[in-house]
Structures are given as C-alpha cells and as structure tokens.
Length: 360
Image (cartoon, rainbow, N blue to C red; front, side, top):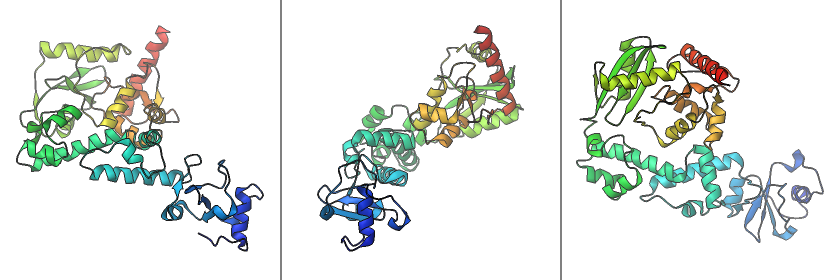
C-alpha cells in the first residue's frame, strides 16, 4: 500500500485514473483500489461508484488488499484467473480436511463469491461440483481405508461416511464392487472375456455379472489380454469360449461397426470417476457422422478449461464404440489419438460419414 496523501504523485495519478481523468501508464504501475467504507477492493476500470479521496486505498496486488482485510468486488473480479485458481485450491483443501462435506454457503463464506457463482467456478475449473469432488475424494479415502482397516465398518468411519448407510446413500456402487470384496483386493470379482475376429481386426469383449465392461481392438490376442488384466488387476480374469450368451453381444458390437449410428441395447458395466463418466455421457450424444473437438466437449460438460482432462478421459474409455470416443478430434480437425490406433479411428469415422451421408 502506498502513502495516501495528496502530495504523493503516484497516489494522485492513480486517483485520477480510477476517476477517468487520466490514462493509465507505466508510472502508475499495476494497482487495485479499495474502499474503506465498504471493505471492498476493485480494478481501476471497475464500473462501481467511485469512492471519495479520504476513503480510498491503493494496493499493488490483490494479495496485499486481502491481507489488509478487504474483499474482492463481485463485479470486476479483481483477483483474475490466478485468484480463482487459488480459491479453488483453498476450497479443495477445506473439503479434504472436513469430516462432513461443507455446504456451498459455508464454502463461499469469505471468498467474496455467491454460493451459485462458486459452484459454477468450481465446475468450470475442475469439471465437477464441490459435492461431486467431495464424493470422489471420500471414495478415494475409502479405498485406502478398506485396504488398511481390519473391518469394513471401521473403514467407513475412517473415510468420513459415518457408517455404511451414508456410503450407500451417497455413493451406491461407486467402488464397482461391494466394499468387503474391495477390501479383499477384489477377491471374488470375476471378469470373463472373449477375443474374436471383427471388421476392425482382433476384438476383445469382457463382461461382469452387470454387463459388458470392456471393448478393445489390437494387433494380437496377447496384447489385448494383457491390457485387460492391467485394467482389472484385482479381479479374477478368465477367458471363455464362444457360446449363446456371448453371441448376441458380439453380434451387437459388430453391427455398430458395420451399421454405425445403430446403438445396440446391451447392458454395460461402466466404471470411471465422476469426471470421466460426465465426459463419456457427453460423447454418447455426438451424432453418427459428426465429430467434436476436445475443447467442445469440455465446454459441453461445463468445464471449458479442462481440455487435457477431457482428452485423458477419452484415452481411458474402456468401452470403444459403445462410448464413441472416436468421434472426438483435435481442434485443427486432425484425427488425433486413439487407443486402438489412429488407422482404426480413421476407418470408423470414414464409415460413419459415408453411412450418414447416404441416409441424408
């Protein structure tokens, strides 16, 4: 903070700038002004009513203003992007430390943001709401607690659920299996798989008792099986022979290759984080024959700054074709990456465009 006197030339210049009586130049430096009567600080060009001279204070940055006890203006948002990032970091730390998930009102207190604005900012920066973030973090703590605790009940309390009823109320089957089975390292979880020929080469399909949990394509059976075992390393993964139970599923998946745009109805066992599942849900809305960029998907889920996270979620999609991550391309229109290979991705997209054009 500078000396607030009329004799101070920097104070005088800044005063004239905020009142529109002078143009901002380097001699004024980078600054914010605060209003003593309201306890709020603003950018020099804020449209708020300007304060009187005796009630004005100048600061070189928002950190100095807040150390002096002033709050950021909701209109001009003087913290800028760096301030927003810091707010989100602090809120994440608050959520991580809390035994019970704080309400939006509690989180917003002291940030200078309304609860709704805070929720939108949180979603824009992280792709999830504070509640969804808290749920994912608590679920992560539960995974660690289940591995270290002597009982499931003890793990529930250590993770902050307050008992098993709160877990099932808030998270349901978020672990992908029952908690006691997870504590035993996935013992008893069985994943059966089959590898067959397809129009795109060798294809692996895997399923649990809930539905198909993996669809993949590769150069060799050994490569495909190794990838499946890495993804489900705690489960009992076994190969099965073709049979009536498999035949319908295989035919349905092959039909999505040969007749793109026709979404076959067969049960899926989708396992991902809250953010990944939001991305995958958005991918299923892309019409056959069309593509979207990673940036467009990020905007569609309300997280425009999470482009890299969207690309990561696409790369981790375990259900190729059923969740059409092949319809997401780079911003310049180039094909981009694909776990099953760029060549397969191009073939799928070309076929979809041809079929969509024929229907049009």
